[in-house]
Length: 385
Image 1 (cartoon, rainbow, N blue to C red):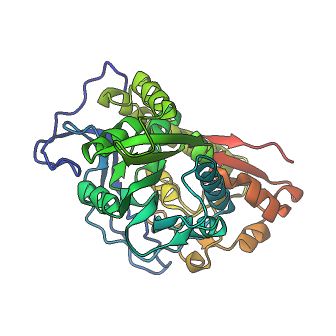
Image 2 (tube, rainbow, N blue to C red):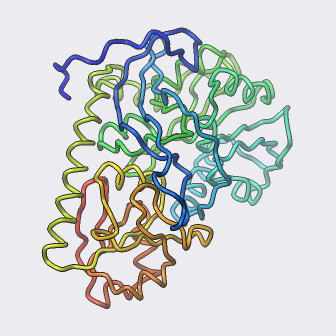
């Protein structure tokens, strides 16, 4: 979809999760998709349940959101990758260098339901975890995006703050999602997708000022840490780093629904690319496996109508997923060792940030003549080490 292409008419009956006001525009439509945490057993009856999955931009707040989600979240089965641990270490180091973390800092932790707490890293630096306020630091690591009521969730975090406390948010920045065309970041259970301008604007409504900003390469340069303090507190005015991020993302068009809707083009292109890649591999008689039974994998395989004849199995480190299948496509989920035993010619890596970790853990893939193929989200073959 180009900037000149007209968008669907606003859906007046839908209500913004921030302002509560009606009206939004659909900027990405993935059609029917399984729940993000559904991994059926091989003998579970078909068809697997599916639900409409669409991203909406509010016409009042501009916040990008999940239109609706009738599913109920299950217990997470994932294993925290080393890349996320390293990310936590970098973020806490930056907070410490900026003076937001010192010996005795009291903090409240809002981790992601999928893992990613910074408690170990903060504790090592002498910070003290508290159950509620008053806190010098509130950390939210991809946590608030899981709340249906965004205003109530943000207010809850502010209520924990001491007068001179700060809130640090780690977000998968939607500006980067659009920039790289990562349409499969949209998933059930993720009710909000933040850009820097949107999150700063939300914070301002609650009397907060952006006093720090950092960007990181996780998720293809897609993560941002933003720090907020009460307006007029000792932390001062909006930081130059925050202003610079706002200006960059605004210049790119992140406030423009037509620009965000270019994710639809990325969807069509990447789905055609993966299906073409797998069809070509089948013609060559190649055995193709995958790694990373994540929710983003589910939507990619479902959209490309992949089946076990094209993709033999998807490996994952989470033992709770072994013996289950990817929803709808019913591609088996296996252990990393089972993937090695398969001796695949190609392994599609559905979580690109895991490349260094999995190459080190499974050198046999390349030793046996196989190649890793990073899905980011287009297939990209990696030269052997």
